[in-house]
Length: 258
Ligand SMILES: Nc1ncnc2c1ncn2[C@@H]1O[C@H](COP(=O)(O)OP(=O)(O)OP(=O)(O)O)[C@@H](O)[C@H]1O
Image (tube, rainbow, N blue to C red; front, side, top):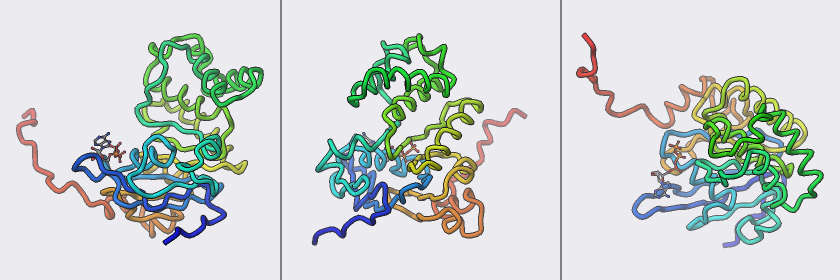
């Protein structure tokens, strides 16, 4: 049966995504409509399938089944049309770490076919906005984890995509830089862009996001406007209610110091 046409207001449509690694079913049928202009959080316990889902949603990992539409364009059938609309911060990024931070941003811009002068201007803006000016001349291999994350984010932003998909963008980032990133993302959404991010920090998702999906066991357990998903609780309690608490909370008596 042909799949229904995309909801016109969706920036990203995930349709029946499945992925298995050997005997492990990482994603067991995920459907999500990410509205244009939304700030969408994806949360779930470790191993829930968030990274696998976001990797399939951005063309980094081929699904076993299902499809992805970016503003109505089929990502896997028309990648050349769909991918320019995406800015991606992947998990555990492997990058060209013998380049300096500035070179890496320039490389990302030139790879997207941007004009050299525009790349230079945006690179300088991004280095300043993310407090990376000094890191601009440092090799990426010598970066801290947080600096690497910020440079990778700059690379995702340089071509001014319509949709940003960010896997744990605040992990390892200091509070001042996190504030700068928050402001950049909020102004991006306010100007009509769409952000999808995964995070383990419920307070951050509650503060930033207007929509949330709770993923567990490779499926969507709840999704929608954040107030609907919260259902009168705070997000952390709702999260634990949906995914369940640790089954075996045994007492580690041997760890006690007295
Ligand atoms: N390349 C891989 N090969 C084998 N198994 C994998 C691979 N990638 C993911 N998995 C498995 O798929 C499942 C989902 O992993 P995934 O990384 O998507 O979860 P996650 O929700 O992002 O977890 P976390 O919050 O810990 O980052 C896990 O059981 C994981 O072990």
